Length: 605
Image (spheres, rainbow, N blue to C red):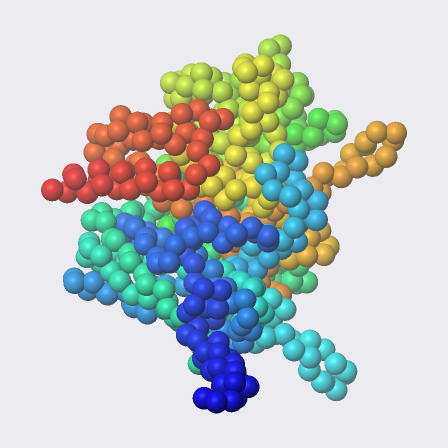
């Protein structure tokens, strides 16, 4: 070409066309990036996204197995109206229909003040899991919108919803996926995919591989649990606690716990009527509803409500109530416990029933109160087990001995002591564990000097997710068979947990100033679905990991029943040889879990 300027113009035009028409899968220009995470990983703001390009999960029958998918927009792409769709999972011997798979979009909550001894700085943390469809009706959730009414403007629909998903360049969101393996599923490998689409015909697919092991988890949980009640539903929803709507919402919360292998509380509306003289009236309609509730939720532990005729308190600053020694109140209480235990026995529910006698006795007066309350229950129903939230050694050596008053001891995570636990179990008692606030070993712990600077797995949002899965492994290490938490719905802040997901404790600081300590997510494992567009609970990533740990415990139980307790102990030792020494690596835990599964499978051959 004789004209160099024309030649240059042509070359420049070709170069422009090349860059504009280059394939979208080139580095730094992929419109939708998909990254798979396991259930214990979490992407925090400012951190790199580290995961896999495919999903590989493994589970037994009658088990949930979860994974997460991070959807990232390319550096130059604005993704609008993002949709997610999962396929059936198909194998040589059948398929797992996508109706057994649930998907949620994670929502961030803002942690403004770090919990004591937190692992992470304050900021945004993914925790609530927003459903893509209304879990009650199966319909799409109405998005938050303003509506004109005769009385003026008002807002309807969900303030927090899974859709719409719109991602600006470089942004991401995370999808939580629960895969349930039905009990009639054949063992083998099942494959499928998850497809993500956006406007302008942009899409991306990630492959899924599920290995189903050749054994089945039981319906009824082996590990015992008590995670509190739902009294705050009435306040948050603004309804009467005796209303039918309250009972319907409470039932949804109970079913959600049961779905996560957590023993749900028994709604008071289903229990026998307690008369003024302590006797019970069994209303046939309520009784039938209770039987159905126990069957549907696979209820394993039946908590007997405390007597209403005597004051059950561990508040050491309050005087002992006069009616504590009132013979009429005592006789009413005895009649109540006697008739309640007889009711349980007639229905075959007495074996794992227990009376939550008192909470955290912390003074001589409290210890004596445990003894007095236990005496009343023992005289009325000697076979009804009594649970007290107390460590397995005395708060003070000079205080009274509680051995004859307690059947189930429940020490804080930080108060665990192997030797005294073994002594209680050898004496025929049970031991549970529980956590609250941030409580390390107390000065009266038998090994305080050794443990005073160590931390158990505290339960807060600004801590690693493995903290929620590891307690059942720790419990197995110490032959502990129960887990207690005071509530999953502790929505005490008037702003609500969506905006203020912290339990704040106030106390006097230096120079007489009032100070606050924030326990982020403390007592909050469920969020109220009122602001998510439905009358029920919104679950959390943390509750999902508690479920995973409870399922792990079933692997222990299956092997122990077959006589392989030593093998279980060997595997547990790899994860947590001591209460204050446990892995924080999710991959390590998953590999040991697989070894447990392979051992179970070998017994089938």
